[in-house]
Image (tube, rainbow, N blue to C red; front, side, top):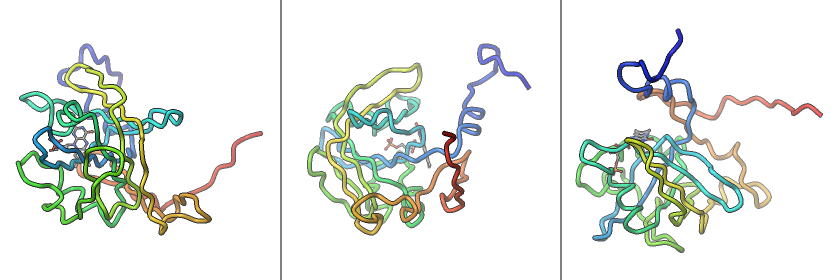
Length: 193
Ligand SMILES: Cc1cc2nc3c(=O)[nH]c(=O)nc-3n(C[C@H](O)[C@H](O)[C@H](O)COP(=O)(O)O)c2cc1C
């Protein structure tokens, strides 16, 4: 099959989200200008830069414009990313809703206050990154949100000798639709000299 996006009926969503896998899940917590807290998953998510440390996520617009998370980031210039681990995946799924409810409560997770920005984070997250808006870019019916990391919370449980240990993290990734992948099936591949 060959696909020319300009001739394809509908968007390339299925091909993009089905082939770019597994994706890390940005579990983004924000606060609105009115002070309401929000938590939602965004799997179009990744590291944009290490120095400065910048994370990115790319929300698609809702029918009536920006979703709550990007709207809050535009208003407050702050967000936190809470790493989704196997123990939290059910809670993460509960937060994929646009209903006007406190998603922390709905997901049964504890709200903690960020140290460096005006946003909440998930206290149970093994790693949480606090971010300050770096840049907000419009891309058609989506946006690209870049956030500079201003503080990181790391649970000692996922460290070895004072460093983050991915083998202890048990992170989960997103595949297509409602399918997810564990990061438990690993193999090592040494780089060539
Ligand atoms: C695992 C997962 C990943 C998701 N990734 C995205 C994404 O990358 N972009 C997006 O616009 N919506 C994504 N969604 C849907 C949003 O989470 C959903 O629209 C949510 O209601 C947005 O909440 P908010 O309006 O409070 O920001 C995802 C949902 C799930 C369950």
